[in-house]
Length: 239
Image 1 (tube, one colour):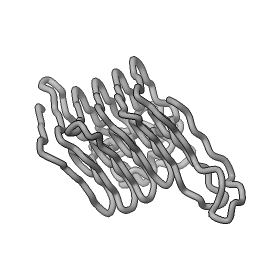
Image 2 (cartoon, helix red, strand yellow):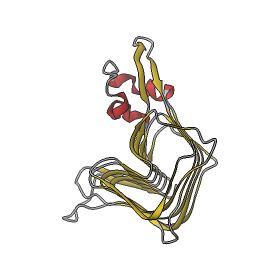
Image 3 (cartoon, helix red, strand yellow):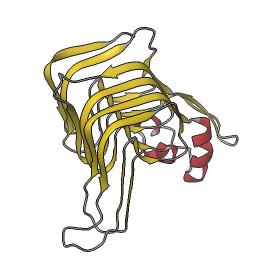
Image 4 (tube, helix red, strand yellow):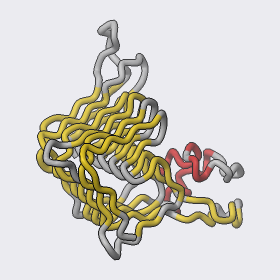
């Protein structure tokens, strides 16, 4: 609690999992009794996947596996992030994943809560796919792919919807204060759907309240491949 990172022109980079506080977290808790902050951030870059101003990827942690697979009960620890501010030195900051999953706060988030998170002076969020001003991908439908739940091997794909209800993603008072913020999903692979959003790139079943994006300049998702043929679909939204 009360974790702080401060410097001049801070850059964070990794092959996978790059974040202002941590690259990847399973069941991570920042209680928020005292505010945690990053000051002086310039850029967060993942050369492959998962980049975020707070975390590249965050998922629940497995506590003791499945309690009763027939009843679809899980003993898992959701993540909890509270009272966090990320800021620059006045010149703005950016988040980039050369591959997928880039978010101003989190590249990919599954199963937990994010409360009172403020992103100030952010200028750009960019990824091949799943780019969002706050979260790139928020989807319980990807639980089986998340590192924190890989060891729950007894879970079948048929149960993912039920698991999403047990491990919801809740966002309250998430604020993105952009500095002419641009959000881009710029991949160009044929037959792929691309997603970009001012707040969340792709969202499924998340509970969002009292949250906003200001200072937004543009949101775009690729529509054509390198040879100028049409992609499968692309989705872009202000929120």
